[in-house]
Image (cartoon, rainbow over all chains, first blue to last red):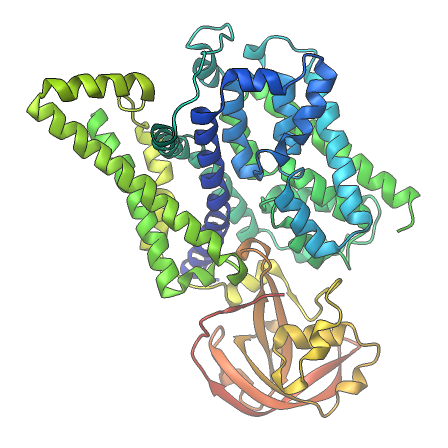
Length: 307
Length: 259
């Protein structure tokens, strides 16, 4: 294959991933801007219960209030942290929202109908997001979880998490501000999306998928392959169900569930975006913990449940 | 310097919006995404253009006010500054500007082409396509109207291949030949199927038999008419389309098929 064709193929794959994902990133930045303008810290305080466990449970359902996929959830979470959202609730929201939202519910239903895949996807994702969020409850210092740059936004440059008091804006100035902020945030988060899309396109252009198909029937290997595929393909959670459908016949059900639960939380492009917001160690946990839970759930289902 | 970067930021937003608009109007957007998600790209186009135009009017306004040094305006601006926080004072770093310009530069410099034969090598070419949840759809399509995807689905959900013997087919796709076809009067008429965007593209193909197979250029688009016979390919009964005519054709407006 000559280099020119290789470059064109790479470019088409990159632009395809970018064009599809950027719509959701733009929506996410716009929602984030609207939150900044129209949601006050008091609203967040009122919304989130004092009890950390109850707060985490609320966090897992916030996706129904702010419907965003995994490209949009990062800017929204960052904004909610600025509004004083507790760290653990933010982690749960970050992991849960890409699946626990009305758009993804509709697309998963459209692809698979009501059945083990739909139920499994929601139960496993919810358990993953809540349990990992609860683990972060043990960390009371936000500055050990979130990067200093992102903290600067939260705490006005100091290492203490001082929340800037905010006022609800009137409609027109509020909208104006939301648009201004969205434009800024696009440059903040967009670069991670672009780097992630470049990597995903590179992998897809260089690694043959046929080699993976040979492992489709093995209850353990199929799960690992689908987890790897979810990571590499970096699909948007609003559409990944349609792709999973094309694998559903060849691959085991457990592995499809791993694909649909691990992919929305962790892939090349979200990992890249997490790096811009969290400390290295936090990113490590945010990648490894969902991987372990999702893969173990997939393998366990393959070995113990007959679909 | 901050001013330069602010202008670059504003123009990047505007020009990315214009690049999207060009893709939408020329139909090249369908080299990248499923038609079903076209409305999402319209939304991106509008958002990019809005963000860009908004920034530019903002920059123009501040320049006018600075040059006039109108006191009233200054006071007005200052209160607005307090509201908008740091928005006017800051601009993205050169690195951020560089990275965010990558999609625009790649889109402008590298000729836009849909996935073709070269991409088959890593996507794998399959004569099978899973159709769970949509099992009945291909049977509503009469054999003469079926495309490559419909046929591959029909082969897949059929228990015996002999039912396809003698059925006529009329297909458009690109030419794909690899070493398996060396010395054989055969090629594959192939298409990519995409659910969302090219990230999930999978190549599908039907084997075509024609004396001229070796003369066809890889990746060129052809229109094939013929009838199926069942042959043994790699010890599997496989329907092979015996071509009655093979014509060169132009690439269709929608190069991909949507399952």
